[in-house]
Amino acid sequence: MIAYLGMYDRPETAEANDLFWAAIRSNLDLGPEKPPEILNRDIDPWEAWNAPDLLLAQTCGCPYRTRLYGEVDLVGTPDYGLPDCPPGYYRSVFVAKAATPLPGLKDFDRARFAYNDGLSQSGWAAPLIHMQDRGVLPGELVETGGHRASALAVAEGRADFAALDILSWELMQKYDAFADQLCVFERTAPTPGLPFITALSQDPVQIYQAIDDAIKDLDPTTRAALHLTGILQIPISEYLSVPTPPGPVLTGLKIAARR
Image 1 (cartoon, rainbow, N blue to C red):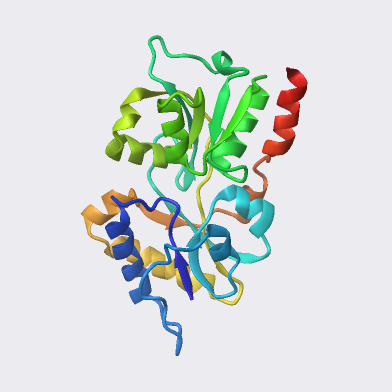
Image 2: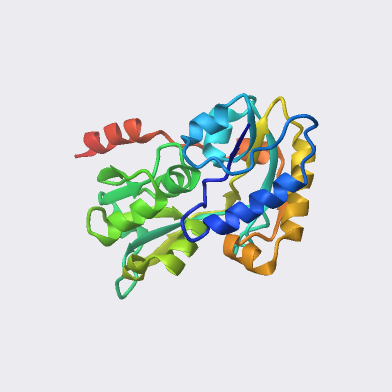
């Protein structure tokens, strides 16, 4: 079976994630089957999310509503106690090179936009909807493959601005020196956070309870390292109602037509 918690997993949080998984695992009773002893880290996210033997994974809201809904069961949504967000929700922050005074979003119309993936809620969908509603269109799209890579592209001058998952940004501010070169100049509206999912063959209720108990049992240092405050059940309808913008290909054509 597969256990994948890679969305906020980085070297500095790996030990805490391992302790979290060990706590979840100890609360699961799967009969003759045994949960994996360690997290799967050398696996493509889509391979994990689509695996028929998926026990637990964390995904993103955009992949869930556009491709995974109906193919997996929603277990629950972790709450990270994020500022100005309802429990279980998160948002994107727009970052650019640090400047005084702070730039505005209109300053980045036709600028180079770094994004992690075209199916990312916080790196693509939320910021594109936010820009679209305000009449802003990038002038170039720079795909990076990850939030940290998007922020680094801005810090190194390979892109002018980027949108980052707010928790990923908080981790960068703690662990990455280049974050000091950046500033937050805009925020999107909150949307449902990154949910836990399982294969349709598993029992999502049992897994939810195992996660809930695990979070309560974690020591304060581990909970703080993961920013975990609890888990809750956000209705599926709230995930499905989040708007999805055109992807990078169609957006790129729109950019080209505007030149």
